[in-house]
Amino acid sequence: MNAEIVNKFFGSTATVLRDYFHLDVSSGGTASLVKMPAALDHISVILSFTGDLTGQFVMGFSMEVGLNMARTMMGNPDYEQFDELCQSAIGELGNMICGMTSAELTGMGYICDIAPPAVLVNEHASMSFGVPTLIAQPVSTRFGEFRICIGMSPSKKKVPVTS
Image (cartoon, rainbow, N blue to C red; front, top):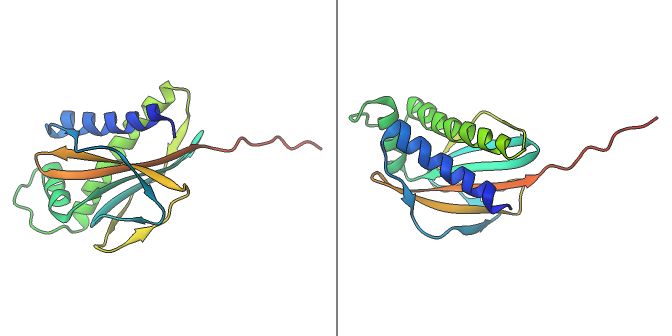
């Protein structure tokens, strides 16, 4: 996978969290490869890309970090339960990051569409994606650490049908 593409996702994550949520963001450590099936975090936000690049963007949170992110998004620091409203908020965070990344990718010549986010809340789930490995990058904020995982590949070019 192209390092420049991976960096666009990390850059968009940092920009969205800094500009919209006033969170300082840093790399929580070294990026690593995650082989399939991937163990998911307690809260996982999954967005799929189609078009010139196909693959997935996954954000994984502990319950504590996910709830704190959702509280900030909703402007309610006293919210106590990670319910459907929190799932919607955390899914929208994924939309914001992937929307910004998609615009960056367009600037690189890649045209991509993004599917709506899927938010999974399950402490012991694993999942396989359409790529053999994901690149996982820890992200550190004042709420704690979470990770973003990216698995993208160029789509297969369509061969024109001739009669």
